[in-house]
Image (cartoon, helix red, strand yellow):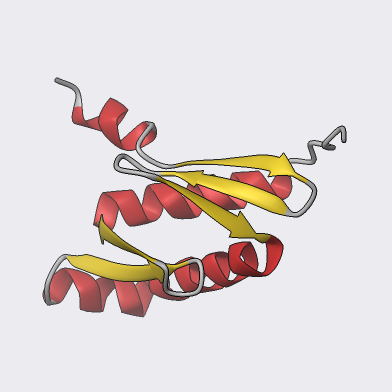
Length: 100
């Protein structure tokens, strides 16, 4: 069992329609609007600063993150948190027009 491969595919983002997104987690799929997507990106960026990561590592080694206007709760360890940050960054950098 390769742990790196499990982390790589545990969180994915997809655009379903115009301004509607889908966050695929190991346990469920979460529908997000564009403002919710921006808020998720803001929270993830805040949690992955150098000082905050050091604080997380020195304390509990995981974070609990509310998503989609506090409708869903995610439990993320450090590797999952960094992978989700990378996935969000790549998602916002790529331009994939949605055909309606």
